[in-house]
Amino acid sequence: MSQKPRILCLSFSPLARDARVLRQLSVLQEFGDVTTVGYGPTTPYSTEHLEVPQSAASLPQTPSGVAKLALHRHSSVDLDAPATKDALRLLEGHSFDVVVANDARALPAALTAAHGAPVWADLHEWAPEERTQILSWRLLVAPWIDHICRTWLPQVSAATTVGGRIASLYEQHYGIRPRLMRNAAPWVDLSPSPVNDSGPIRLVHSGGAVAGRALDTAIDAVIEAGDNFTLDLYLVPANDKGKYLRELQAKASGCDRITFHDPVSPSDLPFVLNQFDVGVYWIKPITTNARLALPNKFFDFIQARLALAVGPSVEMTDVVNKYGLGVLSGGFDIPQIVESLHSLNSQQIQAFKQASHKASHALSFENEAAVARTIMEELLGS
Image (cartoon, rainbow, N blue to C red; front, side, top):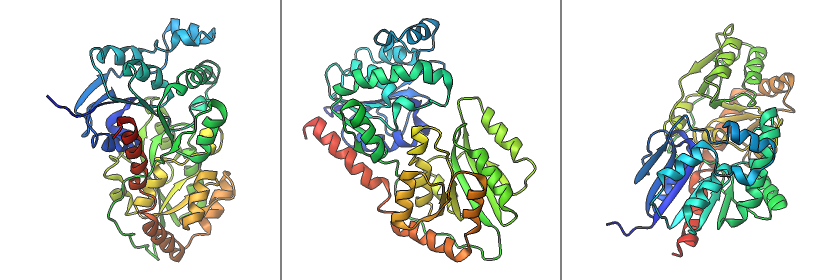
């Protein structure tokens, strides 16, 4: 029987497609046998995988759960979400030396399943305002997530998040300062592809087709920018059954310079993106997480050795300016984005691509993995 440490990784996400969780798991498996709990099939790093049914919601969306949320009976609903109930049922009889909870909503289940073992909370983004652009989420779910952070977060032994400003928010509101573990992608051995002086500038975006990420703005901007720009989109349909993706396709249907592709696995993505010139992302600061975004795709673009064209989002701005990676639009309106695109020429783009190449080691997961290893060593007492 294995004498390795037993590690639980709990995430109410499709684990095999969750880039951040996959990177996290690549470190966890160095320290012991990993049991994963989440949606979808197993991962390459799982010793054991317990699959939560896709139909089991990770929020307490049952009639009784919604009623409790509306009445602010938050403590009574902490373990009521269907996914939480399924996860705890699947974990009956299991014991672990370390438990990793991904996102605040997983904390009640993780701390319950830990039975006193240390818990590392990877909080990803600013949990209390995850979907506050949605009225029902803002009124019903946000107060419950705040309750989880106030009640359960002080019980964890370690915490991480994606950006320094979000870490400061957790410290300010809940008295716990997460360590910084950015969404950097693993380093890949690539070189910048050449820029075609006589051809159009090839823009690209990859990620989820999620309303609120302003992909419609990107389409409008490319249409407005003119014939010297193409846009290729590698999009994963969101939980809206692809509704927003179909809306984007309809918006772009009259422009043959915009192409939609099937999504690509995280490990293949840098190699696919490498053929393009500029990775683009102009997410409007409509929520705290949008304002402070420093997402997977930003680092995917860097590993693909692309130039970047992004909005003046503060966390992305810091990195773009520090390493000279590309252009920042003056704002998030179409004319401002178009102006930033029109400022580009082939010589600049090649220089920005070389800057991404030069920064690819510094901005790779290898640096973030060191944070994860330190946490695991502390929690296992090694």
